[in-house]
Image (cartoon, rainbow over the protein chains, first blue to last red):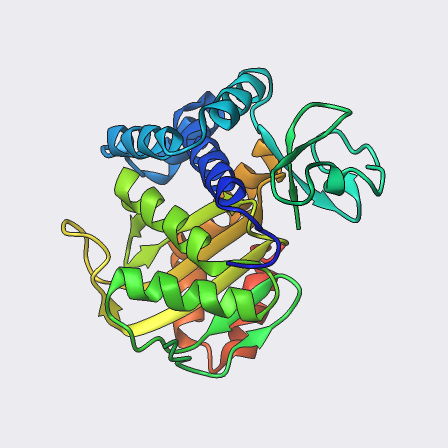
Length: 119
Length: 157
């Protein structure tokens, strides 16, 4: 695992986020229209949903609730931090933002509430 | 161990592999993502490979005409990248499709907006589906020629 992803929780959250983004792409109108145009079908969508649920179940309850709450509000519950900027709301984060939890737990953007992934 | 089949040529947005020797889909995905990581477009390869395999489980990305379009947006991808790989011997991509001879792997950061992502996928798919592009890609002399064709077709951006 890279230095960017420091904890198992962060890695699991990031993986969950990617799966949710994939599911949205496969089910929302814009994505479905494109798939139809390309002649691509998704008979295994149920398997992806099951995988998503299995992965979510491995998360600590607190982080799972937090993730689901943010995901209900935003399509992308996790935002990568690039050059100290949250790519969800584009607020510049203070230097202390990362260290609040001692670097051992995921952090949350004080601007938008998304979970932050420091990359 | 990653076996690099040919010297990859990297630019900001396109990586071309003239000859893949691997014949299994999952191994091809592992190899191509590793090349993307070496090119600096992927921070962490395993989660991206997992995502691409999951996408294939949802439904194979074989477009027909021996072309596959694996694709994914991920937090672990730092910049957009198109990887074009030729496999003259064919790759067993899925059960009910002919072997794939041209792989167009499209990667993007998770923050890529949906409309931008869909437009990009459509452009890259056209590169593989239109006979004139496909034939020129398959016949291109080397990675530079392949990349020039992708640029010309508007698939690189």
